[in-house]
Amino acid sequence: MSDVGIAASSSRPRRSPPPRKPLSFAGLWHNANVRGLVYQAIVLLAVLGVVAWMVGNAQNALAKRGISTGFSFLSREAGFPISQSLIPYATTDTFLRAFGVAILNTLSVSIAAVICATLLGGG
Image 1 (cartoon, rainbow, N blue to C red):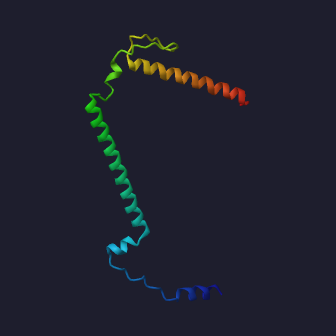
Image 2: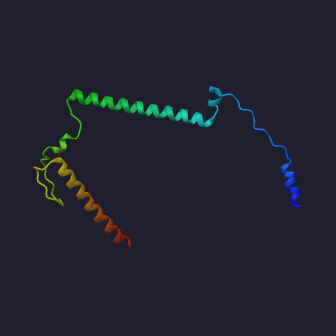
Image 3: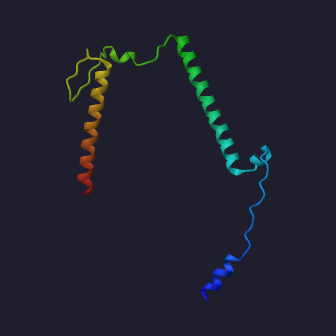
């Protein structure tokens, strides 16, 4: 009985694939995937254009006012005290050292807060 099923399924005529249509712009535009990619590209270009305009506008405004940008200030003397620090710090240290002290202070308070919250929360 199984031989009949195999013979019947293999004797069916195979369908030929549908004829391929020539590529055209209108045909591509009706494809949802292509249309989605085009829309994404348009939005990406618009966002990049707005960002470029904003950066250029900010640079022009800073240049008109004589304000320099960059990280060169990190090597200058900070000139302000920090009351608590895990590493030695003086007002004559650089902004970079003050930034390091601030990071360490933040980490120490965060670790203490996590430990206290864990103990209070019942673990």
